[in-house]
Length: 357
Ligand SMILES: O=C(O)C(=O)C[C@]1(C(=O)O)C=C[C@@H](O)C=C1
Image 1 (cartoon, rainbow, N blue to C red):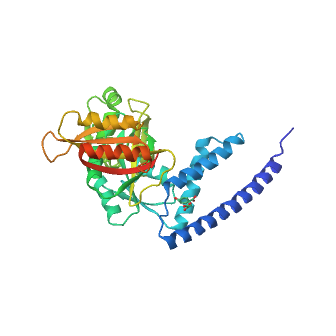
Image 2: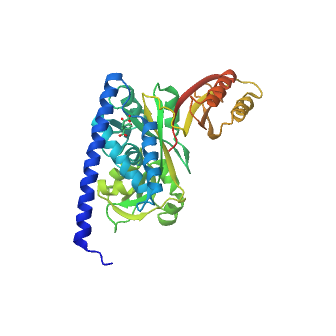
Image 3: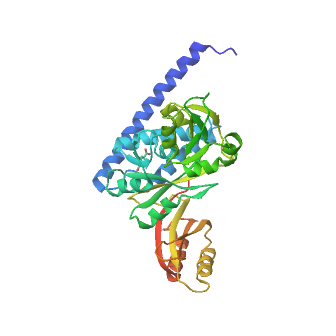
């Protein structure tokens, strides 16, 4: 049957009017939720509920043979929830800036574009902004799948009173950006992690260029735009914002290049059914202490997704352990394992439980 363009467009217009009406209905309902929360002092941002909403939508769609990809639906819904959340209360999100860092992209992936984003110069400034109440949440990088932990973030998490209430995993595609595509490149700016991620490509293509480490990939783009003979390793988004040419995309050595970010806030995230918990501890200095702790995780059937030691900086050769595990602190088995952990440790700090990304 021949499709009549005018008829199909008429149908699209009708469908759009229905969508607009339903979006408005949803926004009114979110405002109602906001009023209840306002009266009861409950937090506006509820990561576990947002996950539930998404799960509900995706499973409804899966049943009806979706034409759109599930990722597309998730992206659209992130924006709908973002708009509704901001209607309840405008949310301020501090992130490791400047604009167009990968942390900025991660923050937008989690909170949608209706948030009020605040760029900060260092992870320390991000936490300070949230601690002082200037922002509601902070987003900081915590580890890269190829280069390992962002130590400055780990160190700050030990000290802060704030909680980790979310995680974001972002695929990182590094790009080579220049101001003048014809100029000889003498200097290449980027974050140390990004330079390391692109080691092979940089050595093969620019063996004689000086590699200069700066505070972020977006900062590198800002520097490169000021110099004809300089380049930056940064995101495609940074090229757009800072007006640079993209010479090549995806220059990282490993195509499996992901960075994990933490959402930090004053709220504790409720159990969502599929959570992770991050914690840090220092064991007693005696044989078998670490073994006993690991054994208690096994006994309680808890899977550890990460374990890393880091100097305490208080005494030479003294270490703390950072652990990520599957489960929420309110789960019985996790609570049991944490009790055993406390018995074998001189210090335990729960950094937070949050829905798995
Ligand atoms: O259900 C809530 O608690 C809401 O505030 C509504 C809503 C939503 O739009 O679905 C918005 C913000 C919250 O983080 C979770 C969900």
